[in-house]
Amino acid sequence: MAALLYWQLPSSFLPDEDQGTLMTIVNLPAGSSSVQANVVEKQVESYFTALPEVENVVMLDGFSVSGSGQNMAMAMVKLKDWKDRKGKGQSAAEIVGAANAHFRSLRAGQVFVMNPPAVQGLGSYSGVDFELKDMAGLGHDQLVAARNKLLALAAKDPKITGMRPAGMADVPQYAVDIDYLKASALGVSASNINDTLQTAFGSTYVNNYVDTGRIQKVYVQALPQYRMMPADIGKWFVTSSNTTTSTTSYDGKMVPFSSFASGHWTTGSPQVERYNRSLSMEMTAQSPQGVSSGDTMNAIEALVAQLPQGIAMEWTGQSYQEKLAGSQATYLYALSLIVVFLCLAGLYESWSVPFSVILVVPLGIVGALVAAHLRGFTDDIYFKVGLLTTIGLATKNAILIVEYAKSLHERGHSVRQAAIEAAHLRLRPIVMTSLAFGFGVLPMAFASGAGASSRESLGNGVLGGVIAATLLAIVFVPVFFVLIRGFGNRKKEGAAHE
Image (cartoon, rainbow, N blue to C red; front, side, top):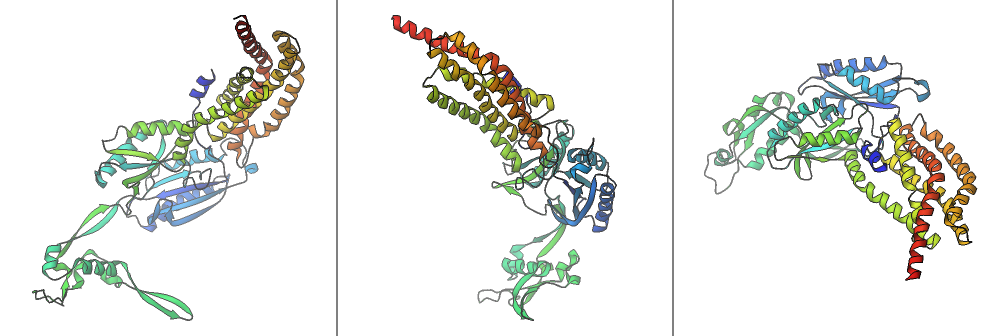
């Protein structure tokens, strides 16, 4: 039963915490002006300022966690104190859900509202995070097509919401096509061409100079009127190489760009993303209300499997840690049980008696799992800690009975009499210690405010485990002791007759 309940419990890594702040990402189509971005920013700001749960909004123009540009912005939404926004629909998760539903109909741009990460350093925002990778060298265009197909599939999946690329979208670019063979014939080297383009349209560092006691840097760059339009490239000249072996008539002269270069408009990514040496695109998604991050990750893996061959994915950030922690949980539980068993074997100087203590552990785990199912919690890292605590609490109650029953049996009592008397005498200390511990974790199980989600996940599991381990240990531990001890005695008697 414990295995079935654990298998059906949704998995996650860290619960989304109500930290009193929200992150809002504003993305407009590539090439949008700052004036168009300001219109969307005002709509976002007016929506949040109208909410009674919001204290203030800080808008950052031209910057977001996805990159920088005049078509991007980010807002930090400060919520009121937890005690001032009690009631339905006033938690951070509920505000995020309502805001995303509201901005979904916005046509001028994309607005995503999300919680900050529960632990700083594990990603830039909450939700699942992964890299879509080109493992077969298909190229940028094929990777973009696979990304668009994945977005279309995710939009139809009820376990995924708000999937989007975390990087910058492709933007219009002007590509300069250089005929290097012709340039070489004209005595122009590739390095001179690149240096000229870098200096004219970018900048080149020259040296430093001292001005009023401060060191200032000198950069060379073309005047704005000579680098505003694509045709301005034809106004630039490159110095040809003046070598003794060259026979061209351009040696040492200025060669115009128009003689060996042309250009055309195209689109391309403003940044080249790579992950573990493979061309990639960072993607992020959110889990709908009532869906765990583990279920969302499983749904994404199923969708990526439908993409063309050569396109793969790899979890990163908090999602990578979730995958790693999920695979290690089984070993952690097994190691805990082995340590407990070895300690009990050393305590009782027996290999059989500790089994009557260990057998009560699943009873406490069942209580923790039932409590998690009833309140809708997931198998996150805090719940795992609660299960380990439950193992200790369950064995503590069993030890109180088994230790005294073993002592009575060694004094001459029968196994059954020793177990019944031990359960009767140890009832009061078991109930008292369990009540003390249960009331101690009660505030955690029904916590509110900062860090409430993690405390609730931990406290709820421990409380359920304490209740089950207390109520069931009184009944089942004596039975386990009789079965294990009786089996050991029968085995000894059989060996003696032989």
